[in-house]
Length: 232
Image 1: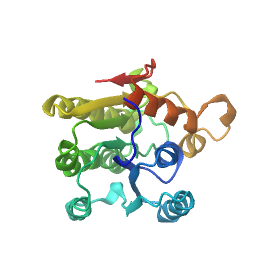
Image 2 (image 1 turned 60 degrees about the vertical axis):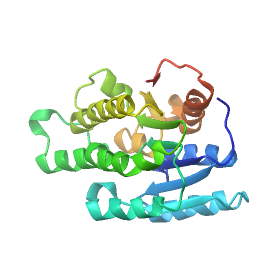
Image 3 (image 1 turned 45 degrees about the horizontal axis):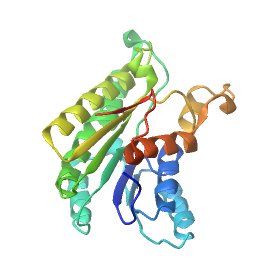
């Protein structure tokens, strides 16, 4: 299926990295975007950039998934009432703490990662489902990680939460016939998240977020296949 104008997509973690690249690409195809992120400054900067393109169909929803409560998801649901449907939900936002063996993982940090990377996504999916079901075909896109797929040590709560999110995605797709699921197990990307974790690593040795975004969108809308992106 080729890209068509005036579809509506919600992207989490939209202000930076892969989320930003997805927003730029989809905006370039003149889709309607709802961008969710906790970094309001970066979110506004992206809005100004996209707005300058002249399409003027971008909506912001500042939200910190780590500290999110039910009331915030109710506010999101109210905001979504302004849209007739959602044609895709990109679950991109995540936090990745320092690599730590389970034996020494801080319990409070464990709960924080699980809240951001798994629990908040449950609430997002549940909030967005009525609008996703209003579309003839909608996409539920989960950004995972090769480190999770390969059971790489020291990824702790991040790996456990991402594995849970993959299972959640598969269940939701099985329960809703109009949903097409996509799970991306990307390798290391040249992103801010990666540079924080590996500050001495040359970014040029990793795939760019722009390239990953293009491959992901090609998988969703043109059925192109890649080893690290799965269609459900």
